[in-house]
Length: 87
Image (cartoon, rainbow, N blue to C red; front, side):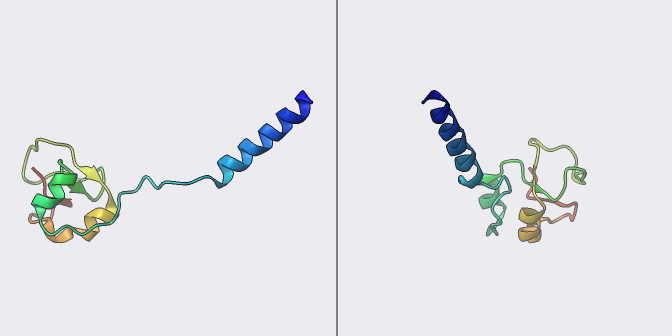
């Protein structure tokens, strides 16, 4: 009886983890109206990659890195340094 319970529990856990809900770690691709709206969600701005350098000098916050999110809000990158809405 114990052996059967262990087998059923194991199978149930394997199936549960295999078909359970999945969440993406990627940011939602939202186009923000302006930098004020973008900075409410992403305080340190949005960078296209982690290797980009800020042309405007030192910033107060580290940018959130997301290629998709940057591309959707590319219009907000005034100095074309691949960081949108830096503070």
